[in-house]
Length: 510
Image (tube, rainbow, N blue to C red; front, side, top):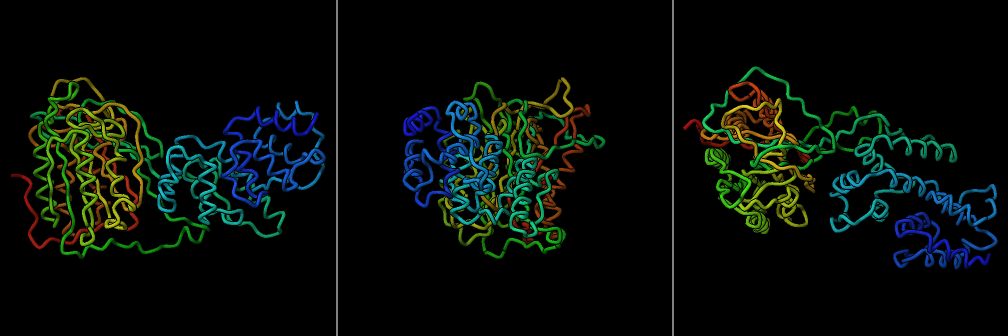
């Protein structure tokens, strides 16, 4: 068969995704920009022009089709068996392709989130593929055949089982070069990234926030969210990952490094924006959030005491929530230490609700404050506290009469992007959270009380939120059946320690 005709038949048999894979595999072979390659025919022409492919030496075509698992197509071409010589496609390029084939859509989202500090967001949009991510990492000197540190960290985080492929590649390279290989990636280690789950928040009417004996409400920290079931109160927060610093060897892993503290020396601490949604009469599926005014008052009291300028926005529809935060992101925060945003509303997993019932994705709440969007807050802590359901499930559920209401609908979750964010979540994914109609929500009231009690002792915010977790986990309805487990998620790089206010701690019992 005419070789040009054979190549044309191959080109017609390949999908766009397979063509992109071939281009990626040939990146090291062609010393030119491959962005102009739009088809397999374009690629084959360039390979022929550079003497990489010919009727007399079709080895590269055989390797390419074999690598992308088009064995049946390859058999139909009746090409001569390749000679026993060095492969033309580099083992490094093959490794990256094989990794990309085993990375799921959700894992790709996680990878993009992890790279949010190193790669511009426009290079991490939804349509960007895993192979394109690898190429961008190479362009930014984050990845090469001799520098796999970042790749190892990412794979260990999102899909630990794939670490074995990297280990085999490194062993092969060490054998061929005679150099001792660097430490392998533990293929069985659990990633340190925790995905956050939020429980949906329940409205509690006229019920004391009774405390029952401690029932362990176990929370699973994985990078994938669970669907929750809940009525109309809070939105769930997507997972924020806690990204530990990369460790290259065993001694680095055991090295005890001092953790810094974010500066808190400005005359103005920052803005605390409170979005408080009470009146859902315009929404057919959601009820009034009785008790939310108590939460608003407590938050205002505490954050004014901490030195924040408190701004309150009441009964915002979905569009208003977004416009409020976008306007806030356009302010000059250069003379301020940090930002606090509190959203009190109904919700479901990955979203919060406007009073019109419109869902607002959690990533849309945080995105306006990411580094490129709000440079005056770059490197400063951005603290989000979300009082909203993450689903419809109840921890230790039971049908009872009472004033506890669940406020969430199942939906996909999102991952907030960028460093220096903290999301304090009222509940873990797939579950509801609770609100007392007279005394406010379990989560917000515990948060405010622990800030008042622990800030004077210079306790850092993550430790305070751990105490909030412990306190709320002990709470239950009067029947001892309904439970709630908050969970913080963050990409903080240092500790958040609020300066001790000059005024005495406020009372929240009024």
